[in-house]
Length: 477
Picture 1 (spheres, rainbow, N blue to C red):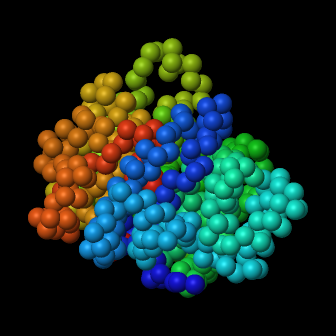
Picture 2: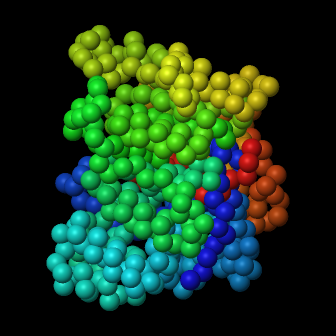
Picture 3: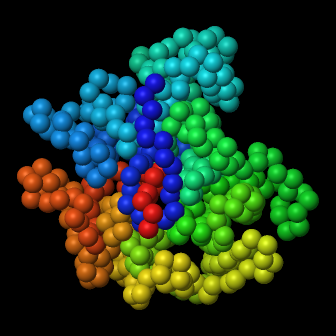
């Protein structure tokens, strides 16, 4: 079994990215039926081949930045990677197979070469999916590459479906998160993602890549005795998803309490982080439990040490008076309120922040030592309805490749204008690719740059490039 570089460490959102875990769109996305789309957490059905072509550009940028030799070898052979899908498909001859741009399906296939692991995982998947014992035996007899593909897509080559697909696996951020030298395994809120969590758990505990960190894998308890805690519903589950966890500095993590991450999940994650001395402080940001927002990284992400992209209407606190009076007054639980509390270990009283912008300014200026005034780039240039329209298509969900160089969707026009107005270079990925291949641009010399990625179909999956990445290693900031 090939073992990639084994170092795991992430202590910020903006340190230079060195290793990342992703999953390219598989056949499962092309099998989501309209009547079942929302059951699988999709707003619409997607065209698989278009999604793949758009996602291939993402993989290509990651390879340019993290493992350029893989692309140089391909181009020197006279091939154009975007015209050869085998280059992007795990389990196929010609796959790029990078040690720095890791593919979930490939890592899963690695561990399935072990007969004991294969038997246990097949049994576990068949148990939660209601397969027969004979189907379990049939799966167990397959080659690792093919079995990994089936466990993810749910379908055989013949087209027969053994169990539902898990199309949300492209959002690897929600499976787990590396914080300093620890791995915090997440617990998805929706049943549609249970198999993803199972596969991720097997991968983290069994792949040689993570062998040195097994004692540092943190799991939220499966069953928490909520009835012993005041103020919590007895049926509330402890759920936590990676879109609600931000490592903003070596000693500070922000966790969102959202539609997908419960108060119990936040409490258990905070306990694990403090008990294991992973960080010194945890800030909890409670946002409206609405599909529009989903996770805190749909509302704000970091661009560089002193710059953030945000949805102004919620980050400034204006959401409390937004909309018709009836809408606000009829909300008995005040779910439109934003609450921000910062906790430190063994300190009883949390610190309160007035709004998200004041929190982010504190991160930049106090945690990261920025001497420049904190800058906020607003979704849709803070113009209604473009702010909300572009937040829906992930204008605020950006992935930093390094301090100041981020990936975003090309469809969010007014957000792009806001980047330009704040001194950022904006370049489409197709143009950047041509410049790099012609030797006119050094990718690593880029500064304060928004790279625009094709998004006609990919954005409709309701997740940006932060969602579609699990950083495993970043340079210290």
